[in-house]
Amino acid sequence: MGYDLSVHIRGGQIIPTQGPSLTVYENRNKPFELLVALDSEKKAHGILYLDDGISYNVDGKFNEIEYNVENGTLTAKGSYNYDEPQNLHEISILGIFSKPSTVTVNDADAQFEFSNNELSIKNLDISMNDEFVVSWN
Image (tube, helix red, strand yellow):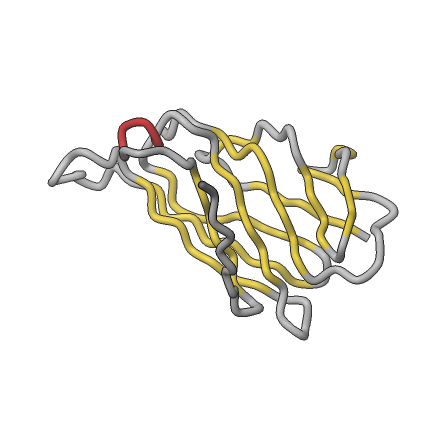
């Protein structure tokens, strides 16, 4: 038996996701995705903290990544002291009202889909251990 569940996201938020899985261990083997909900000014912000998910004392071995969207550009910047093995596989951006003519990831053209005011950039292979830039126009 399936259930439908409505989820409301405040505009201006960037939500990193991974999974779904039943355990943290299983989930750590899944790629990451970003869900971006633009606000009325076409901006969004989010922060992701990553460590091994097991250790009590991470001893400085963690990544703290800050995501920002402004002027049709998503940036990821942070401190990278943990070697995360999983990559960013997909980015979904909600609140874009016209289809972009181009999308680039780190200055390289990227394939994308656009439907119902959502820009989807799939089949990515972006390291969670480095900064990146995604732009659309």
